[in-house]
Structures are given as structure tokens and as C-alpha cells.
Image (cartoon, rainbow, N blue to C red):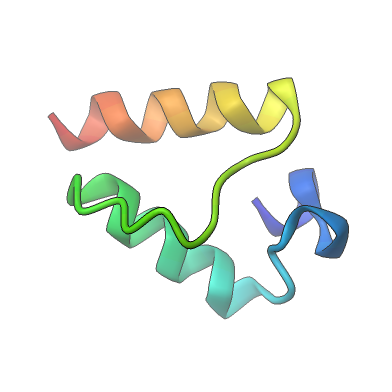
Length: 52
């Protein structure tokens, strides 16, 4: 997500992006970060499906 969304999307570093991926994968999804672009939304959808 860091490379897709970048700092403008709220993903300021690779560890922050990993944190987002883990919370999304475990379906916790705290809502503190979310993708802003359609490509990022597609990646988020895939991660959510993998979590199920």
C-alpha cells in the first residue's frame, strides 16, 4: 500500500502499511487508515477476502 497510495494517502511508511494490512487481514479494520484510490481499494478488497 505504501507504493500504491503513498504518503498522500496516509501510508507514511512501509511498517505503517504492514500494520494496515495485518489489521485488515484479521478483519479488525480499525478505520484509522483506508485507501483513497481505486487501485488501493482493489488491494484492500483482496486483503479482506484473504482474511475470510
